[in-house]
Length: 261
Image (tube, rainbow, N blue to C red):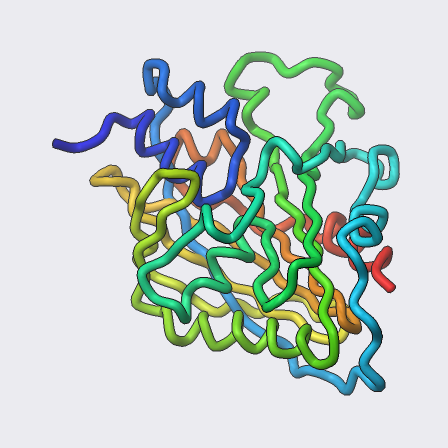
């Protein structure tokens, strides 16, 4: 039996590591339609990072996350209650694809315990339109999941390589279980992302919506020194209609990378 549209939306929400409140809402009546998701990926040539610095702690990374008021037109919120707490809650059926899944869940794509995350979303009330005209307009907001991780030695370079290698190895797709919901990523494609930091990998992934088409999600992973930042954007209106979630907002990437040491 096929799952309801709401269940399909919940599965996609799990991939994006959406909030538990959204997952709970999905289990009510499943009124939202599912959307098409495609993740695309590409990498810029890595540059020499010089002497390896000591990895930052989770507490230090949390201070480097974009805070409320630091980026005009956007709201920042803690990821404590909206993102997976550990890699054990995000699994794939192909080890090479794990770094891709972790990056989309704002978790460290490499081997480290130093990880911090939050969400950065459009603040429509700060613009000319004080209030959304209807519920659909209220959901037409880009929400970006941001993850920061830090590494000893050449760990950050290895993390970026793992993501880049995963884009190639997982081009044909992979099975994914996140927050208890299972789904299928049908295709992964490398994208040419804007060169940021010392090294950038960008990719898009198509996600099967259980018979209701596919949805396309974009991810960007940036290394600056021994710190790695991952960005994954979801637009709920696009998800409900079916289609591309849209590129990760350049303003969010620029502002976050600028804060990294």
